[in-house]
Image (cartoon, rainbow, N blue to C red; front, side):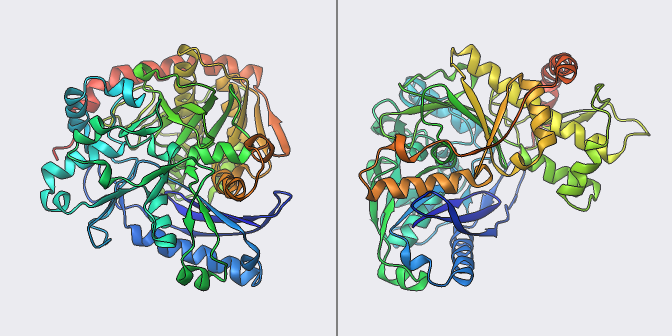
Length: 492
């Protein structure tokens, strides 16, 4: 048995897979995000640990003897979060998350201090990354900054609580802006720009390597042996390992809190000009590119709360009743927390346009689903413009449960989308696969295989035709509103 733990933004998911890679148990616990000031997004690391224990206890309650059969643990998690420990291993302040937009000025400082930063890291300096957050702290919270002894990524804080080790994997660490992504090692030059050294960093491992073992205390509390813990991966790389996206040209769309268009590469191919990310994969000697939109399924959750809909299922049924043989009258820009690909614009805002007195909540919901799809189309264009081949596209994440959204996405992207078994918990599946690789002599190709296809959804010819025109309008809307977004930037 193999245990996979995925620390997401909205919750922790835990799965147990057997030797046939079948899901035999799962648990989950929700998390909340704090927005203490404009552009700020934070979580308390202690809440991550508490939620992990709740999810583990659910599995113990379901199958009391199951966890004793687990032989390895793998970790996956939300990327980029700055989790700060002092010399006594105390958490210094709430973790600053991936969708926090406060450090735009610090991004410019980093690129001025290290002119070769994009070549070293494969990425534009963006507020979501870990490094500019530390510079922001240096300026705005100097007392907290001066106490920093270790900087960990979210999933690696869980590892520390589980094993006592400071360790991370290449894929997650590539999102800090401190990694030399081509060399798969910490960059002293990038660390020095933030006043840090390698002593502040965890030890680096490939995703399928063990980093330590469960402590006796945690093993006893969880009803497990002191088993190895694999390095694991950032949520997207682990999601890829969960559904077999490890070969060049294989791709997936992730419809989680954020949205990701991920393509595996066999070599390091940095191309930051289109605000694409180039990171290490969690499989050794493999890399990947991805476009990222900061708000995806979170937009749907937001509009459900905004309109007072009962729940996601009933709301999607309302939207499905609309006439999709013709274009909707309302459009939506999904930039509720700014945007990354292709705009790299933390000032971008969410926008509805086309409202009338007859507009109802179903039309707002349709506009949200379509707006997120148009944002993915922007990302696909950046990937294709970079010369990235895209062979087949799978769908993972909570939003993958909606066939309607799949039809919209397929029609906007002009891609046939593949839905596989386990896609809704892809990163946790991938973490369990990496745990298996850490203790077996198997190859990644034999373990990280494509799951059983549940369904495929292809483009609708009529929808594709009017979506192509609407996408052009969508792009024009952003260009027109960009200077207004900048004027609306809060003073922080």
